[in-house]
Length: 468
Image (cartoon, rainbow, N blue to C red; front, side, top):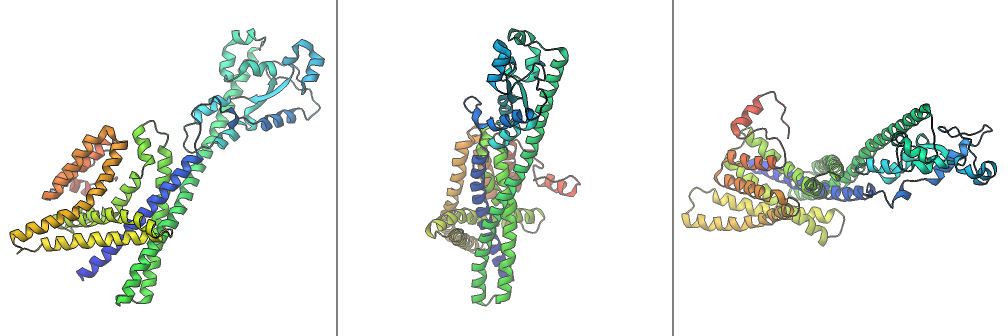
């Protein structure tokens, strides 16, 4: 019975690893696509054409002159004409005070500066909001040329400058101009807030759908392979195998949807952070790797914390699943390269990688547990164990390379944390392991909720919310 349960747990672990890898890879592709979609220039100079709309300004002016009523500048009160020739013929040298021009109430440059770092707005979103009817106004050429990229409030505040340009406005006109400027800015901000929420939701959903497809197909394929073998061995009948495969595939799709959608939205949301470290983390696969690791080890940690397994079993399971996660990841990539069928190659590669590492590690640990092993034999087997653990070093090397590239400010703290956890695992010191994990949490700005098993037990017994 125990052997049967172990087989089922191994199958679940294999599938969990493959699901996590598929969802993480899918999220990386979706995050790259989102970064391209929402990319905006850092500087406004040289990029005005991205946000200006001649057609929107033309329609605003044509609409105002479509009736029979005389059109006037809303602030100076001067009569406006639609065509330059009419303005020159009727008003002579003062024609610029009477030629109608349509322009933005709240300047394009200010809109760009305010929203260029919004991770969920496109250039088109900003363009459409900036050229909405609420932000377009028809004035005289003299007024527009003098105002340029100033806000109405700034323009009205500099009376000396306006008068040097021949623009004299009443106090009432000044107040109206300021009010219209504020209303236009508020409307633009309201519209772009709505678009931000819609775009973020759409990004999550689209990435989630792709992740569901990839992770679901991965789980379906892997479960199908394992259940087919179970049928051949007589361990399951066909109906049970099909039901189990469909159930696993559906669960994998749900996992992929939320994991890929969440990771993609998180990566895009942090892409314009002021912290270079946060930006680097968002662009890397580290968040996905962490989620996959939590999915893999979470059950073991929970069972140890609840007392279902002892320290020895806890350490053995961590080693088994750790080697599976490492080789499963390399197997996924290798399998996809050798079998260039979308998903299937990666599934088979991760399945083989996990099976090899789990079998090797499990066999060695079982031999080590023999109470009557001779001292010389035990030393020889420990050397074999060391060779097996060498496979895990490649995974740690990946993490260290990532830390060296993106977390150079924290490298010493990370080394210390890893060494502390390694030493603690070696002697079965769970408090030491927790201490090492807390070093990483605190170094990244997180809040530590417990520092040893005694504090963990107290937290579990309290009504305080436990936040991972």
